[in-house]
Image (tube, rainbow, N blue to C red):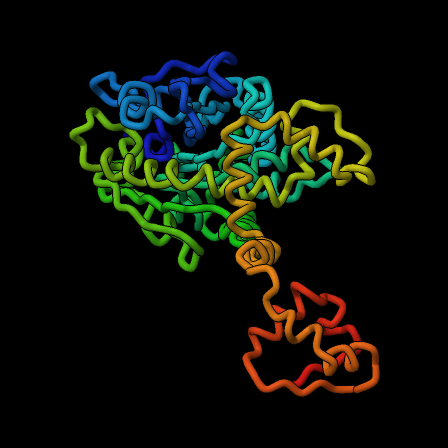
Length: 411
């Protein structure tokens, strides 16, 4: 094994990926009650399926997870991340990130699932790509790439698997026995430099939006043997201290093996499934509330032609878009809206009015003292008794005498 073996998310024996291996691929459609999308992203020298394929041939995203989590549709995203060989991609990290957002949005629109919650599983360099994708989506607005904003609004959870958030120190020296500067794949690989400016800038930008997502940082426990010794992505780089709403998880495998599970008996698999189940259960209500807050973006997910931004927030437009939402989503939004709405005092008013006995208090309201006060002969009316009784008489028999009428009642 050599340096590129460690960087890779797949074994070096995998054949060169073709163009059909790039973009999104559905591994499991989810059942009739499917209500969340899980998207996996590989790392350098990776493959959208082989990177997650164990030695026994089990692709856990396809062979294990659907049975454990039938409510999830499972997708995987591939991109050209080769660090050796001919015809290597010249895409930058940002290019790949925007491609991920665009393809994911298009796939979900074509399947009428534009508002469905999203959970990402990103391995190694795939996590760097994902952070750039979410940063890009968060900056979209009504007048510019508003459709990309839909991906950020729908994102609930992010699981980083051995992602070098702080870079890797030894990439400054050698990769495959060559200096970093001699590699042709600089657009992608140069960002892995320890404390690189690009990574530091990305951390700052991502931290400003990270509180919007549930995050799990996973780090490898065992190092990978390479020519220059044993190497791993240290926990200090795989974990970002201070991230809001984040958990940490140790995976008892090497870097490339940490996203491969041979069976449901694998303890690391069970820990991973627990995180995914927790996210899947809480994501629908959370994302429904997100879409209520960003309802002006709903026309993008409904497939409608977007209107002029100046007229976009008109109520009729949003009502038409809401009709495109699934019945479950509409019901959930209504329940949330009812729950957070202010109480309606009219319900108590009419309930009390129905219970009132006819004629209550008329001995007082027909008295000479009350008539004189009402007609303005007396500025004040002093009554010894219960305040509740006075309020009842005032509300139900003489509403014109309530607070604000210019009259004063003292008791």
